[in-house]
Image (cartoon, helix red, strand yellow):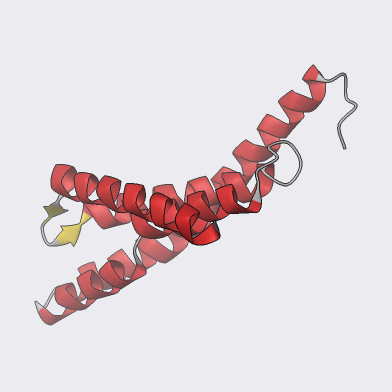
Length: 134
């Protein structure tokens, strides 16, 4: 069942990733679509991994389908590295370094924002339960 969950999530994530790539494309050689896909994936995983343990009970297969399957297919480290390499090869060294910095540091920041949003959601849920959840 885990393989099926990852396959379904991966299929859906790959389709969405392709759609985002077609919609956003590149800007002066910078692959905006990959940057936005990776940042949003970091945000969603930060949120999901924080909230799912306590307030959003998900089966392990659903977590695999969403995290490994959907988000794994939606985001892409390999495209990011190829994009950075192409920028470098085209003489856009500063753009390449900026893209790497934006991707890595931005991914960490977006993961943290996802974590913060989950904590805020958990606080709201606690208040809704009369502060009983822990």
